[in-house]
Image (cartoon, rainbow, N blue to C red; front, side, top):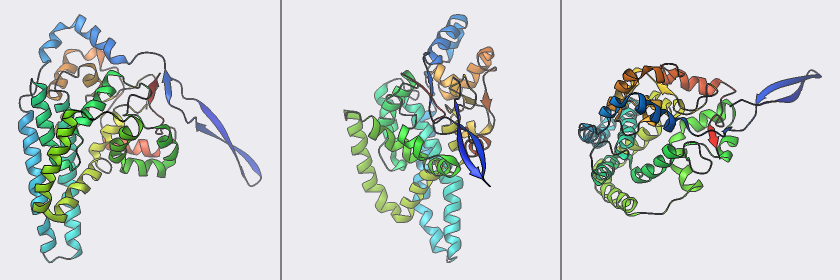
Length: 337
């Protein structure tokens, strides 16, 4: 994968200035995605890795706790406006929403990510039911659709027209430069939600129907209980979790090409502790049937396969690099026909 450059001419004080600009195109490759081959090789040389396969039996408790925390805050958040502190009420509201709400919202997203890999229960139907329950504080029904699209992302990584994790051409062309990337990044959770529906709509199946029905019923109960402050809290928490929050760096770190010849990257920093180890992303794509709680063990078992790969220690630093490095754009993704 080589980055192609072209030159843009401009004039300053009657002098012709040639500026080197990255070509606005994806990294197109003809090779298969790297994870299947590495998985086969690791299993051949280290069959003991199979001991890590299975479920995280604690996931149902983590997910339930996160739902309880978010809904409880949503129920009581109206009290910050009843303290008689004027504008400070909004400051307190936003502070709680950012520090707690957005953190929990991101954890809810990533709990659903684990659950949709069937890593909470052995039966798929039980995982689906837990995903529907975990979806409640996210307001909109997305868990089952996410499961379908995320499966496409895994099994057809980078495949043109199938992997909906990759920005659309029009999206990448529109949000260019620092300000374009900043606007896109702060609202990326919205683009992740609407892109698949617009680019590759899928047929409504029974579990998606259950997702819609369960969420409509849940919102009919929750919204009158929490009122508009609670709804605002949950909505702002979602937007912040997908943009202005440090944990949102995982969206960038996973597959944006910062080092040529590599399309998946891992993060080995402290925020893995509150994101179900989603940072271990090469490991996750190699073995999606290993729960996040055991991915660090996988890396320790076979360090030769991961230690040489480019990785990150700070999602916050990576966010700034994404925004400020001119050569990194929404086109900085690997695609294959």
